[in-house]
Length: 475
Image 1 (cartoon, rainbow, N blue to C red):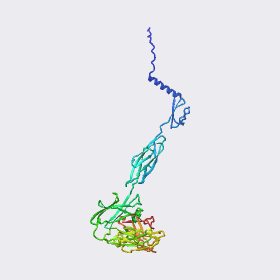
Image 2: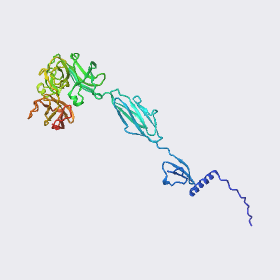
Image 3: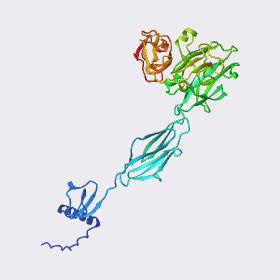
Image 4: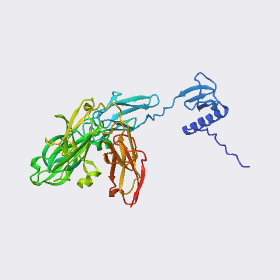
C-alpha cells in the first residue's frame, strides 16, 4: 500500500495595494446598491434639508452632494461672463465734438474693460480705471474737429468695437462761373456754417493775385440749390491780368481747397461796351440786365442805389430768353430782392449803375418807388404744355403787379435754372400788366429720346405752378 505524503499547510498571502483598492471600489458599488453611498445631484435644494432630493426638483444652477441622505456640500458653478454693449455701435458727432455714454450689460461679478483706440481725441472719462463689473456705463468725450476732413476712430468696450465718426469743421463747396476782362465770378460756401461768409483767393497759375475776396453776394440760383443765397462773388478783374495770357485759379481763402480754374484769360486792348436796362422795381424784386458787348461771354456787375446810398451789388448772370433775340446771349439778367428799407411808404429814387462805376444802366434809369408793401405776396402761375422747343408759362405776385417773379425749373427733381417771369404773356383775361411770362429753351442735354419729368416752382419756395409736373420725351 502506498504511503501518503504529508504536505505542510502554507499561509495565505496578505492582500496587495492593488487588491486593496479593488476591494474598496467593490464595497462602494455594493453600498450604492444598498443606498448608503454618497449621492451627487445638480439641482435645487435647500441646505437645511437632510433627505436626498428627487432629481426633478433640483435647480440647474447648483450642485449638491449627499451621503446616506445627508447634505455634505453645495457648490456654486462659475457664472458665465459674456458682457454686451447696448446699440448703436456707431456714434456720430458734429465738428464741435461732445460727450456721450455706452451702456454695458453683464452678469453680477462679470468684469469688463473699456479703452479708447484714439486717445488723442476720444477720451474715456468713466469708469476712471477703464474697468467695470456687472451692469455699467462708459462715459467718453470727443474733442472738436478743426480740420476739413471727417474723423473716424474706435473704442473697445467689453470686447466689442464702438466706432466714432466726427464731421469735419468745414464742408467747403463752390464753383468758378467764369473769368473775363470785367470780373472773376462764382460762388463758395461752408455747408457746415451756412450763415458764415467764406472768402476766396484768386491765383494766376500758382501766384496769389488777390487774397480774401468775400463770397457774400446774392444769387437767386443758390436760393434754390443751397436754400441760402448769399454766397456769390464777382470781383473786378485786376489790371495785372489784362496784359497777356493768364491762367486763373480760385481757392477757398487760406486753404488748398480749389473751387475752379479756367483756361487761358487773354484780354485785348478793346474798351468795354457796356449796355443795360433797369426794367423795374416792385415789392419783391429789382430787375434788369447788363452786358459788355465787346466781351459777351463775360459777366458784368451792377450796383443798386437808393439816392446816393449803395444798397446792393449783384452779378448779371441770370437766363433771359428775350436777350437771346436781342443780344444773341441769354445769361445777362439780374433780379435783386427789394430791401425792407424801401418798403416804408416814402419815395425812393432808385438808380442802377454798372458795377464799380458812376455810369447808369443805359435805359430806364432812375425809377421812383413808393410803397409800404403791407400785403403779403400772393403767388400765382401756370406751366404751359411742355414741348421739345421750350418750357414756358407765367408767374406773378397778384399783390405786386410791378414785381418780377423768378421761377425755378427742375428736370427729374433736379434744379436746372432760374428764369425771371417778365416777358409778354398772351392770356385772356390778361395776367396783371401782361409782362409775367417766362420762356426757357430746351437744351440738347434734355433730349436723346429719354423720358423726363419737368416741374416749375416759384423760386425759393415749395410752391409749384399749376399743371406741374409734366412729362417730356424729345428725340
